Image 1 (cartoon, rainbow over the protein chains, first blue to last red):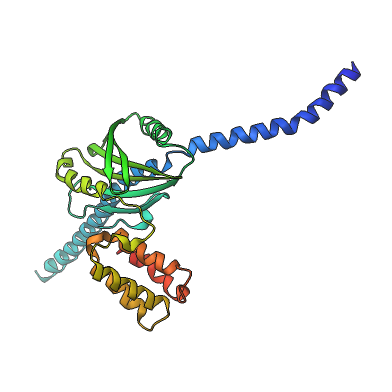
Image 2 (cartoon, helix red, strand yellow; image 1 turned 180 degrees about the vertical axis):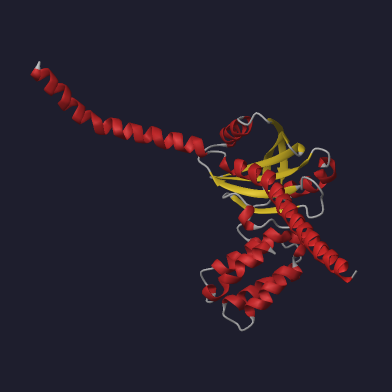
Length: 84
Length: 206
């Protein structure tokens, strides 16, 4: 039994590098397949979100402008009341 | 109007946004990817990516002629909170590179931009010599001389070359202008690279 176990362990030690190489190869293939098409994906993503980003910046600027207008109209209104 | 570089995804080289439109703004961008497969395998991968999103429908519209050779035109229809969006992707595979031109607009406005998109797709060209696309011989020789003068370290050479590229070749588009300038800066015979590269980011975004 001990001999059998030793033989199995020994053969595992010899086979491990072979499996490691194979695993590495599979990993590289998977990686390549996974990444393939990223140019089209990036192009689509940019097309969709650059438009939305531009909109977000626009809305932010409009909100800031509105806040400034409200602020200035409130301080202007206060001055008017004081005169009366 | 060129899109800010920070808004572009990693493989996108240049992008343009419609400056006037209200709502979803039409856009056009060019991406490049190093590949190790043929056109059909690349198309299969692209299809899988797009149909993974259940908001999308993808279709292959067939071959489309470009100045760089026949490419494949694909269409992605998508729904978003902005309404229906239509995206056209022109895919050209040459050697170990895939070139992807992506045009997008809202479905409502798509017909308005279609002619501009088709013109842009048809004009896709690959060239080792950037000046070969300049049809006018006199202009081509002039810009080559200005480039040589700059590369030889002539005083005001950079200013003259840059001004000529930016003002004399508007018809070739912002991307052509940007790559002519960046390739000149990268040229091995360039004696002034370090002092001039700082100007490039501003220039590309203008």
